[in-house]
Length: 261
Image 1 (cartoon, rainbow, N blue to C red):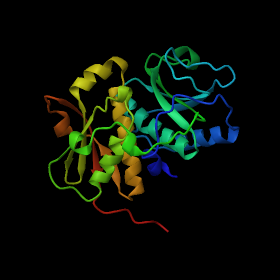
Image 2 (cartoon, helix red, strand yellow):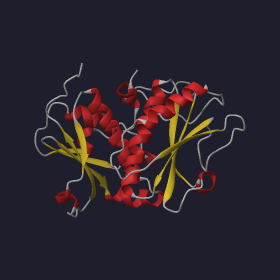
Image 3 (cartoon, one colour):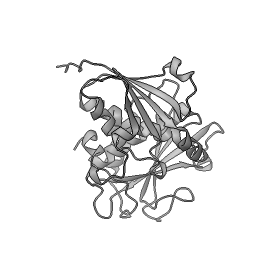
Image 4 (cartoon, rainbow, N blue to C red):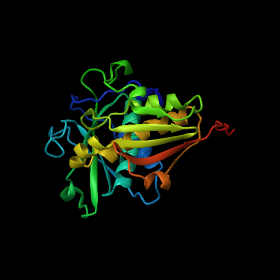
């Protein structure tokens, strides 16, 4: 199983065996995380793994009970939040390739534990060996259909729907699925529904959720050997929309990458 396969098989796991994982496996997770590229050079991140399998503790005041928590520390701004979601989704998918389950448990006040500055925040992913299977068929996922979340302004290349299919399966806070897509030729413009922004802003989750969907989309692009780039379309960013907030644009190269030998 690779990351792309995991998109269609993962489910959020909330019940774990309180068992220790090998140091080698934890090192692999941290090593994988350190090699994920950021979507902006201004985004600075660091990673920690908290072990609680011995005392069955929690991280934060409403976390899922798990033997381990993967923590991403970054700055407090929307770009960093999108980047955090983008990275954390790929880390989550990697865990599933290692037969582990995970669950996004959101934004946490870990200022004392990690000596965070006032401009920093921490995102947390619970993980470990699942009680039962960590997998399910994607048809059982409660997600909106592509036609409900995407508008095709012009006919895109043949892989556009495959990219959006991966993005729509992303997990989100309260399963709110705030993302909306506008496809124009070789561009996918990513928006967030305003009503969801109002709801999720209380929890600083909506740019994070957008990043999670972007993570799936980018993983799919790599699987399909497409050259994807994340940009901001300034002309669109300056516009005001009645129902949506513009977030970012993904440029899709119409020609597949050549395999370097």
